[in-house]
Image (cartoon, rainbow, N blue to C red; front, side, top):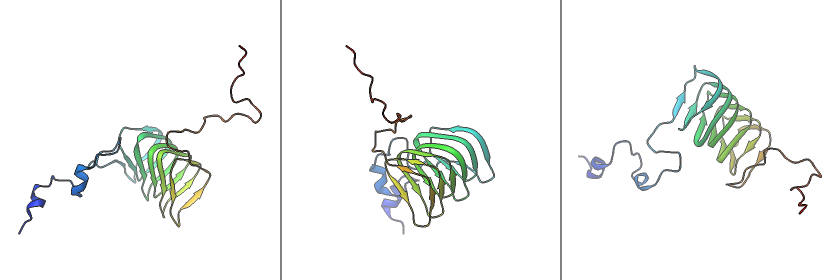
Length: 157
């Protein structure tokens, strides 16, 4: 016998409570991320306005400012990465910047610097580099000033 509440639930909703929850900026529930398969190799600049999963190889630059990037277990990245949320299950060689969070899972490895307000490194993950955990809304300065240099120009008025 069928249950009435299952019959009226919209197709594709795995969690009925998620229907009343607004999606975070740049993310729509029920929509699968774009995928770069294991046999695909890309050299150059990669940008987009949707979430992305990479199981192939990417060399260059990846920019998904308001979206999530997942590097799958077969993914290999030799790039500078910038996204809202970065999850690493494969291998990343290059600096990673996220406006929300960087997560390195057990099978993942990152060889480069991380800048994000939240960083999670699972037990067994490999990480070599530095972590700069800037609070949300603040960005690291593009070029640090040399020691002894004044922070602002003197006012000669």
